[in-house]
Length: 301
Image 1 (cartoon, rainbow, N blue to C red):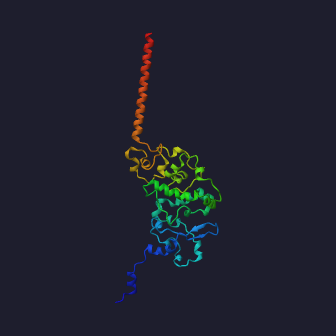
Image 2 (cartoon, one colour):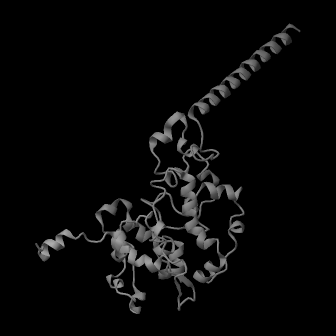
Image 3 (cartoon, helix red, strand yellow):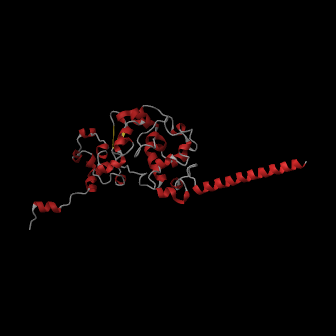
């Protein structure tokens, strides 16, 4: 007995996202797939690592959810090379993304030093590779991993003088020279992110207002204090319970790093003030007794 076309169609499962993407990955998973940008002369990779993609924030999307459906045809039409993708076409108006303040991100990004210097040449994709990007600070409890991951985004350009020159037309000094004022540079770079000093901690959501070196944080007290700005940036997504446990004022920092001035214990602080007070009182009493004794001896004479 033959099934009707409608019944047959209903019994055939549509291909999954992974199965659909597999057609793209047949070519685009090749590490050497690339082309030379005629405008800049820069070699641009077209390779996508499937393992990284399926660990990224976009892992549930089909390639053609972002890229034109015309890419289903192979070989691809050459006009598709001018495809104009913009992250906020999806992220700005989706109700589930409202809590991330993408409207604010768009406006602050255009005030950032990157956009002011390079304009439309600098886009979201220069920092966030959509094929591998994943939220880190919000979900990752391992602060060291977050620092390493986020700093790599900055260092892939800023630690490469030729890349910076191609992008900005300027030859900038090496990072260790530009940050020579900072004590123990390597320890700072392992413990805090570039954006913790080069953005404003007061911006709602995640700040994309990247500040110039003239406006970056250089006052040590900004981090090394009870009200460390790190609590508003790097550690902002840690829970209050972690922050307050065992009496430590900034316990959430203490769990991951030793930040002089920020990782203090309330009870030890209180004890030190009590001891200091006792010492002052003892010295005062001792001084008064010595003065009275001296006065008495002087009167006898």
